[in-house]
Image 1 (cartoon, one colour):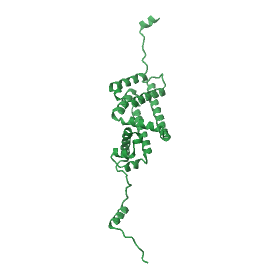
Image 2: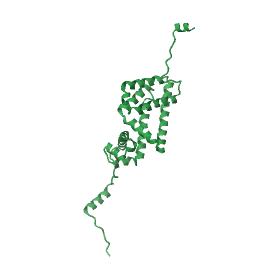
Image 3: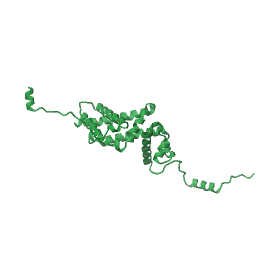
Image 4: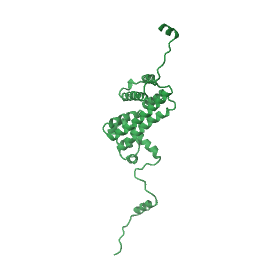
Length: 235
């Protein structure tokens, strides 16, 4: 019997010829700079988490916010958990980068003011997103472990920065640097936790006053010299 052959339509033949001559791009694969696109999606994810919370932050909403397809998001992040983990890493990277910029100057006041400006006016979604992720970490041991490890490293960097300041006489040395680091973290965490709830309480003037008070608390105590007359009277 003669061998039977299946007949291809002209359009099918054309598609077959095209597939042989050039590779077919993976479905949903974005074009352009890989790192830039990933950073863009992380920014979108931070905004969505800040607005919707963890439970409401779907990959579809992130795609809508970024103006791309859900397939483009899943190309970079296999699932929501991977995306959220990348967001947490990105948030800690941003904060630690701010610390490193000021390491050489050891200008704690400038550092805290930059942090205040950055969180409150330039990128307010960052802290709101982090608060949502901290709440989520209570119920996800693996994610909690990630947050714990990054926060340990953050405290180590903060402590190292304060120790440098103590050696240069810019930070009070009568309190261990690790305790000062925890004190500053507690100050900032409490402030930013209440800021979205009581924005009127944290005006620009009060914010500056709080920063000045914090700087006074961690600065070396001023030594008051007694005048010769006062010393004579005391004797």
